Length: 75
Image (cartoon, rainbow, N blue to C red; front, side, top):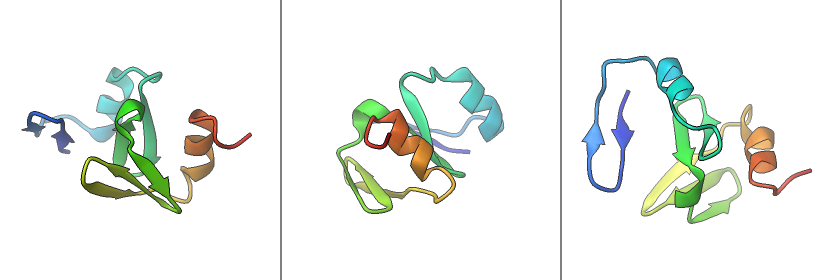
């Protein structure tokens, strides 16, 4: 697992699921089986991709509906 912040990259020795349980659900959302993002850092969304700074991340088909609902873009 790798955690990327604006200041550094961390590689803690814990599982992805354990990390997901520790972070605040109001600020973070899972977008893919391999990605969780801070909602306030999302620049824009294009189709099945979202952009954070200069990084392009996929939105997994299993997570898309819940992700859009979480952002208030899908009812």
